[in-house]
Image 1: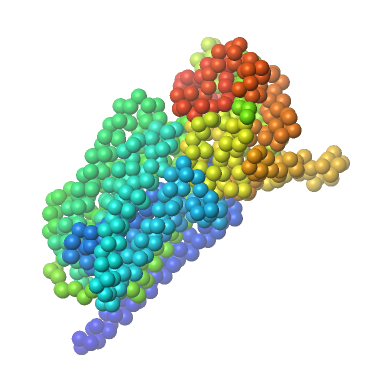
Image 2: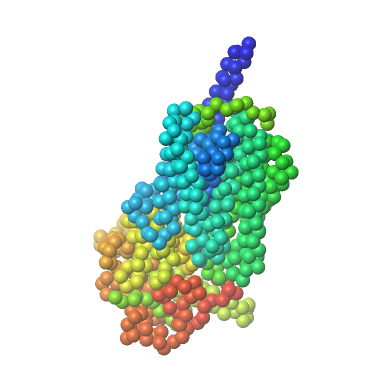
Length: 392
Length: 244
């Protein structure tokens, strides 16, 4: 009887898995069709214009670079900070970090006018004064670092690691944490901060702000992974205490990000800079939905974590999902509102709404990495056998 | 090495936009791309309204933000200080458009049509061209400057950024840019800003001059004489149609 139940559960989960993969594949195919249309017909199928040249794709790019850096750091808590209770998440976090990096590169690829030319950056063509040259170099190094770390970590989870392998995994992790934050993600804030013509962006605090939002996004994503994996697999991936610890970390990052946002808003509101004021107006007119999601999301997520105090993993998962939406809203508004102020004072404000082509291509990229993650977690050994944990 | 620049006399400009047309014809720029744009601005209310004009080419800044941010050096300083775009190298990331405070960059959002404004295959038009198609100017395909790059003309491939070149292919022949050569009011002047005897230097000595968004420290090589920087309260009479 017990065997039959097990068999039927496995069969059901297989059906569910293939349905999930099929669903993601449909979104990927729709995105691919629209990408081919965009490539052949032109970027006029997007909502972008000469007055507002960056939009949803660049939002996806900075969001996923941040998520990559943040998730990697959560995954390396075991080695870099000695948190053994994070061990079951370590390989998954590295995988998420790698796939998020791939998503970021794909977002850039669909945004640029010529992908073959883009691939010559930075080794064949480069400009040392451009932040973009610098950041493009970091993808290669960070990608290689993550792949190497993933290789050694899966050796550990397969039980094939020697003492030397474990040492390499540890030192790679210790190197990857500052690299993810300082070398990879913070400079993405620099991509915007160096643009002096956009008062909304030209802020030296933007790189640290980006780093904090990266930590927030990565922690929230990995909390989501822990909760969803536990639900899907019908077992606790990490202990309730560990999820609660991640919740507290998330609360800390939200509080720091909210603190920085508050002073940004204050400066825009009371700035004597024309574009700063214009951007403030844009945030609370055209961008009011996303501004509400951004600010409201932080407040709600923080409230849930603080009121819940780790009692319910489900609520913590909800807080993590809300925090991810809030961070994505912040990224989108930063980019769209930052360009909405007219360059010359007598011009009109510029507004931007992504088209269905942009939305479907972006959804296709997200579905593609989700699909890759779903398959990889089935194929690769993700964790060493763990002790059964307390009920969630 | 000369420092090539433009001086625009706003006391003479009467907003005919011949410079815009000349630029389009000369460079065969795609539809809705205006490398030279003349803003028509108004201030006040009827009956005390006033109309002013502000021609705006690329400023060819000495301290050009677009040159700094371009990741592949497709945007660079050519001989004479011209801010050029290498059409064969631009990856279409649009970082230059984001960084430029003047909004002079035009991205090819669609695949540009070579023959954009008239159907020159029309039997009625064939006798007029005698085989020399007006849009097929071989000079626009040439390579120019010290780096021997393809930097002239418009109408390039989809996904590439374009902007004013100061008509580098005309300068190569000792001619002025098309907008300057075709201005009926002689409001546009072009020459070596470092040469005290050049027409532009003499004009800058004679009249009070200013530059657009001087506070941005971009050090533009387009100077205006006459008039004043447009204040915030002026209104644009018609908006630029960036693209269809």
